[in-house]
Image (cartoon, rainbow, N blue to C red; front, top):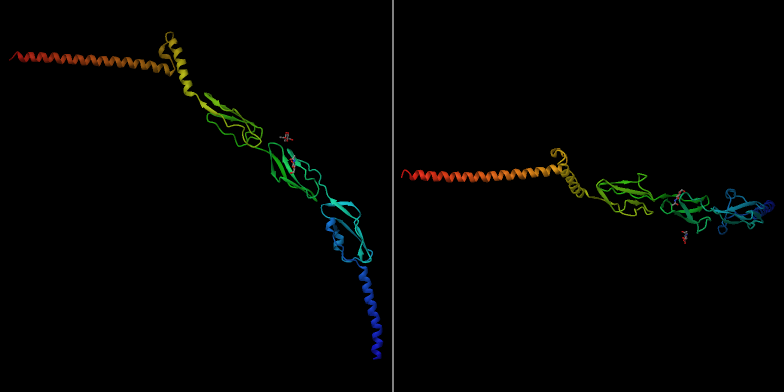
Length: 290
Ligand SMILES: *[C@@H]1O[C@H](CO)[C@@H](O)[C@H](O)[C@H]1NC(C)=O
Ligand SMILES: *[C@@H]1O[C@H](CO)[C@@H](O)[C@H](O)[C@H]1NC(C)=O
């Protein structure tokens, strides 16, 4: 019994001392500091990796991604087992107005702060290729696009005519296509088509109307008059144009036909007359022997 008491006494004291020291130490340590989402405050990587935060230690907090320091230092101190209030205030980062590329602009009515979404605007006759928006991220504006010039389809071909335009490729906004007709054809409609901002032509392609038969008839009349006047001066057989020779042969055939016809008529008449005379002669001969 005495031995037990003797040994238990000092043991208890030591245990109590250990417990006291442990409690003291636990009271002195601070818990791991926490981010403050309401204020867009986060821990630094250094603080995240740390596990022991003893009494008196300083930890630095920082602004969340996309936010920048407005005021304060961000340093908090472990005092009597609790962290002091951070004095840090954060505000949204400003991406600033984006730099437009050629024939491009932006509607920044939504602002240029972190998270803002703005619209890409292309000049008249240009269209967006890629994203039609930009968003302000912590790293800056995100979204790729460019304004490309509007093009029209290849201009329609026209029968008996030609198309002509500068690029030779698909005509672009504002480009003009000129049409012309082959000789002997007249153009009906617009001779110039312009590619508009919607990728369409401002009018339908023209038509090349054939006036060939009309013109031949007129040239026939025109050439027949000089040949008829030239006939007395020059040799009539040497005329190269087909129209006068055809009229000449037509004249000849008419003469030939009439000559042949009259010859035939004469022959037939002669034959009939001859037959009649022979019959009369025969009957006369017959009557004579009787
Ligand atoms: C497109 O950009 C070019 C080069 O900056 C410019 O010359 C042209 O006028 C612009 N087009 C329009 C429709 O603004
Ligand atoms: C910019 O966008 C706002 C909101 O969408 C709109 O009301 C305004 O008309 C736009 N401005 C231009 C110049 O397009």
